[in-house]
Length: 193
Image (tube, rainbow, N blue to C red; front, side):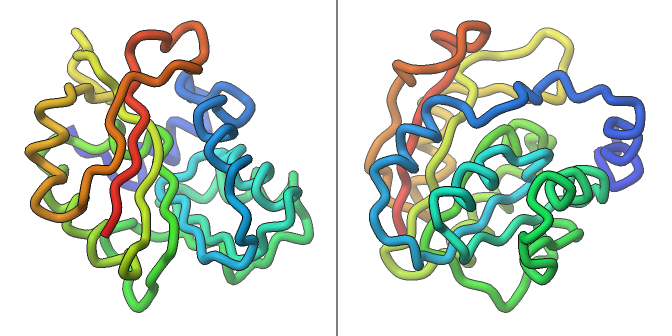
């Protein structure tokens, strides 16, 4: 399967975005609610429609950068937030992002959209994109999917083995506040450089 720009553009053109819940997920909302420094530099990779962007922006965070390989979700975001800085919307392959460092990277369905052969490259890229003491925070599926994917699942042991060489695992536990269809199938995590 070739999960390239054309694949994702087609998904958005046909409105086949079953992962899109239409609002920020409760675990990310709870995490963002406890952040106090509105100046931190934030990246949301493979953002899709990125409702966490809206939430952060309207809470006063301004140094938010969004990257997606497809154009439609970035256009959707700009339509919802017309004053969002154009220079912080990046249409590009995540693995080609260079010359940026972030204090916080928020993960919401991007990791599970990547073919598993890209997982080590993902972990290495996250390490490279984070400032010292920077955090990668978000949700990972704690299950497998019978249809192959995307989404691609995994489990806690696999994630520990994957990320431990690159980032310090501060939290990796079952999310207590997942949406009903994902209840019991998501791990909330905080990894630090």
